[in-house]
Image (cartoon, rainbow, N blue to C red):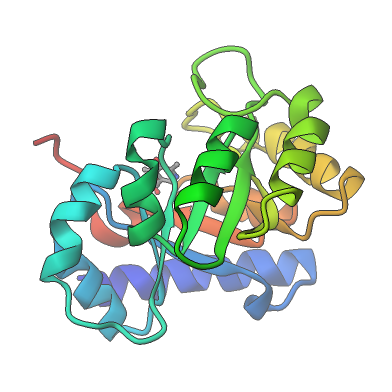
Length: 220
Ligand SMILES: *Cc1c(COP(=O)(O)O)cnc(C)c1O
């Protein structure tokens, strides 16, 4: 079932890349395994996936010790990071996509053992999104991150208000790309199961896909 879902997702990615005149290799598929057991990570790894997204430090902290060494695997924190969890996050993840304040950047800098790749989470809508930096704070945030020697700034991340219609997400994706261009940042993490084609058309370099790969999440 995962294999079948993955091939459907790959077809959709290829089609979106073709429409946008982009190469498949310009888009990293992040398999979002939140709520699913560690076995989901192993199954996806066996099918060739190497990038994984988790939302909660505590949840991944419970799964990680059950995983064998997975050469080449990269774990992305894509959920909000509370500062009291930043030490553990710095140990568990290779990428933190949700840096949204200079203070959080500084904490990760102090607690990271080695280099840490980061994205800045941007809040583009007034409603819903509780986290993320407003666009006008990006210059100070970028300056703060660049002052942290262990942090490698890749780009921007956002999550538009959820909508069934992917076209509702497109203006947010476009806005994120414009911001990344204005600030000369190469990476754009945007697009989920229902809207990643629009995200790819608008320039996403990282898409975060859960449901389309693993099925619907059942609340524990
Ligand atoms: C859960 C989640 C995803 C994946 O969402 P799906 O709709 O299941 O693909 C992507 N990004 C973030 C930040 C998430 O929390």
